[in-house]
Image (cartoon, rainbow, N blue to C red; front, side):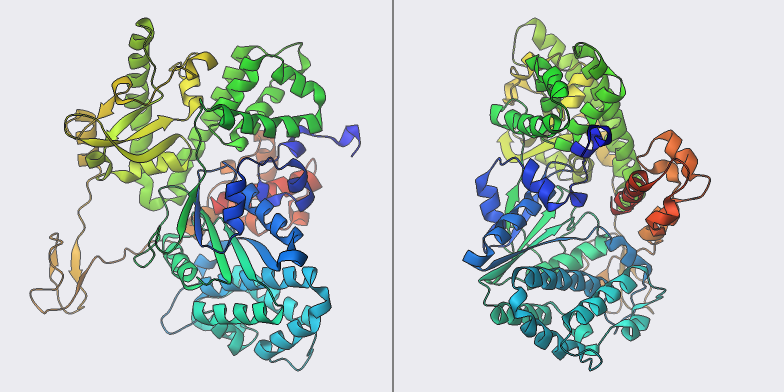
Length: 594
């Protein structure tokens, strides 16, 4: 790459999904060997971490490491992303038909496995041909694996974009009845995978599922984790990346029992945590321009503040540095601390805007999102600022958060979970005594909030924070704000008799059976417009693009759905060529995926 072609954006790209293998191998910074080992072992894992904290990078690197040792260990690593899953919502689900979501999910997994096997065991193509001909049943191109791969790829594409009204119509689109049967049943799919494992003498297949929950609709999440549970086998190790708080595991999946738990955590005053982010930035920024890194690191307080405010999220740190470049600081002799604070504020404000747009995606959480932002900005931040100001004068330990009684949390968990999902707060679910006869969870603010709002003045004060109850505020059921919030968000479920001819309804959840006719009582599902349709209809100004680009796109596209469907050639126009067109397309995909 010549100097003229270099762009800072190429080195601090924050969509890890689009990074190629060579980039990941060159710029990966190892922080925990244990996590890599767990992501490649024979166990099932739920891998939890907030947005941008590095789950995708770890999973992609784990798959690369497994496959580098393939000849020695015979373990196959397959990374699969499900970010296009929302497209499946347009297909209506009618009983007694195949499930488009399961067809698509298992189809994508199967295609990725077959491609990896072909790449790593090219001498065994005959076995792939034999196995695939048995399920595709096509005499037209028997023993032609490329033909079978294309059939499967085309079927996945039809599921994503075809003009299909419902799952009954989908039956005619499947390449073969046997294939659709395999892709509609986790047990049949697992049996087929085990046949492949035996054919190619594999020790096991490690499936690394990225974007494995939040991109799915509420009902898709439940189906996915039932499928995830059904795949459990010593030779099929599944790992699923999820976000904290908002995942619907369904009635039949139990965390800790059906899959072990692995999480990425972060503490701003932990030197190892800080150094990890610093090493990521150093490698990326030096790859672009040594001078940039020298300016960032010449004063420890500058680079430390950026790393601390990342909250363990490399993406957030990249955005701060990108904002610094946009403001022209790298053309100056040095970087003033106030410029860093200003950049942190700009990036944080963008994060709050993104948080607000969650109402478009997490429709069920709309009122919780509204109340969460109000709680933070009008109550929690002013209280914490005043608390620290008083303690600072007495030279006492400072606070970075607050305790919430478990009895409060249990009534309105969604308020805190949506904040954790967006990496605005971190929740420690260790129950601790918070006095007054209560136990509680400690919730710490993203350090960018602490710095931006003057709750913490500088890097030095970060080292003076404490999570001990005597150094922090606690909120109880008797706290007026919490009492009001619980009342505001109180939802009374109405239970209906499942008998359509019976009109009995009640708010009393103790009724398992109808007292009038004896049938089961249930909470009816509300009919709602497809999230896929809702998001497609949103204006292009919702995309994370500059105002100039948005304005130019407005001459050709009227909503996000049109860009989502467009190919790169359709997006090209004056001032928008290959690189920008690809970024625009990725912005639309990311918006739809959440």
